[in-house]
Amino acid sequence: MSEAQPVVYLIVCGAPRAKHTPHLVELLQTAGWDVCVVATPAALSFIEVEELAARTGYPVRSTYKHPDEPDVLPPADALVACPATFNTVNKWALGIADTLALGLLTEGIGKGVKLVAAPSLNNAQERHPAFAHSVEVLRGAGVTVLYGPGIYEPTAPGTGGRAYDWHLILDALGRPPVQATDNADRLAEYERLVREFHAGTVETIKRLTREIGYSAPRFSSMVGEYGAVEASRRVLAHTRTSEGFQTLTRHNRLADSIEAAVLNPKYELLFSSEEREAARRQLEAHGFDVETYLRRFEA
Picture 1 (tube, rainbow, N blue to C red):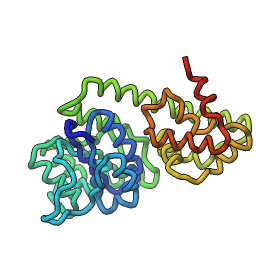
Picture 2: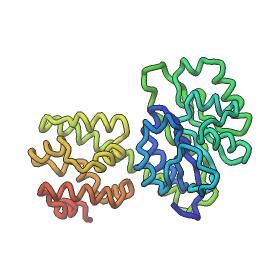
Picture 3: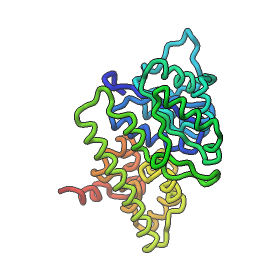
Picture 4: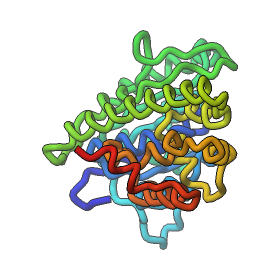
């Protein structure tokens, strides 16, 4: 967090996409935004509040403060509602402010700050006449609503929806009002590394399945749900040694562990120093020679 950076409030509503909030926070920060997370009460069951507070440097707000209490968040230059549920989109359009999140969104229209809505709903809700009207009202008030053919198209109830294109939000926000000259290049490099790390992780799982019959079922499920980078962070956040790590230890394959991948110098941009240190400690505690492993990456 930095006083020189423009501030975006990320308004998180109660939908499955909210589980990916850490990824969006990372993308926004890399793009040059100082991020504050505000959650609806329903969103709290989808997010890790302490984790997000640690990542942003601000507490996650979900309720109105007392008038005598100081405001712990800096003023916003932009607000992004993601995921914006059917409920929130319709209430926002009607001017209902019965939660802190909706209060900020409704005020945002009057303040003239940049506003972006990334809806999350199913196509049965989409067909309700209130939704189309709400989208029209919000767009008329200056809100960029990321919805429509080729942008975001809801799927049938119970199908889980499609993978979300986070670039839609970054593109809609545009460059921050104040931005370091290298932020755009840094963001492009970050996104390239995310894709490369994910592809490498998937390939490693396939190779381990062929060679030692271990498919890492729990971790593979996390990779499918969160992506390899976020899945790795979640693994590193737990101090207990996973069953998968124990399996790789027995097969003398710790060089193929996610902990070893995190320590690869080329992926330093993706992980914090704390996460990399946690990976090192785990490997060294099980007799893995980290220094010898790292020497293979030296030019």
